[in-house]
Length: 259
Ligand code: CAA
Image 1 (cartoon, rainbow, N blue to C red):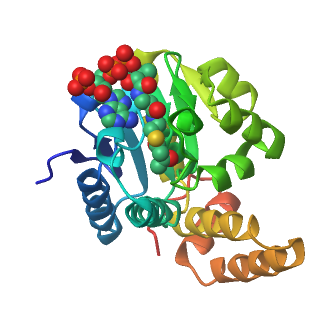
Image 2: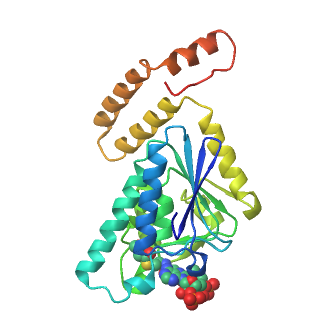
């Protein structure tokens, strides 16, 4: 269906692979447009409970935006390319289901930015992650200057972006850039187990919690708390809330139906 994207379903989990291993899965315009379409497909299917994003081959998650394509761009074309990447990554960030980046090797520039647009990041011990844009004469352009600082804090984000350093998985874990580190052969198993654990919970509650966290990070505390009270209230209009609490009282496992 697509040249550089593979979309697979395993039970209620979607697995999206950026599959351009000859170029270490570098994001050119075509791959970004295909990623956009694949995200639309995932959004259309309301049986999917979580999305895992990974890279094809065993060397890279994504080694960045495509340098060969960017090399001769003028200012307007550069701006348009950044806006395209930002738009697609914003769609990923705003997915109603939780998203997990399974980082299997290089996650540089646009690759680090893609992982940052996911909710949770699991790294293989072979991961090298960073924002090397300044070594190429550019700034990060797919929201790295924004999401990296929101994820690891201003000072650490500035050091990473100003130096262009590629850090290893343990360092990424230490600074909170990734949630956990596993051996490469365990990466997909770990991501799937985590996705399945999330999928076993009430889907509407998980989705509303994600939306409240994402909204809260961009607004003041009182606005964020007001939004939280709204979504908390909304949960009580769902059958899954009644089921969850009835099951607790009846000392049995809840069976959620996404209703
Ligand atoms: N764009 C285009 N092609 C890329 C690429 C990229 N970002 N990264 C790797 N490739 C290609 C290489 O050109 C090479 O292709 P050929 O075989 O046709 O020569 C192939 O992938 C394999 O790469 P290497 O031979 O370089 O492999 P290596 O093991 O020697 O090095 C690497 C691996 C350290 C990741 C190195 O490829 C590298 O430094 N890549 C670029 C990383 C980078 O700077 N990324 C940021 C891009 S800018 C950006 O992303 C902007 C933004 O924020 C939007």
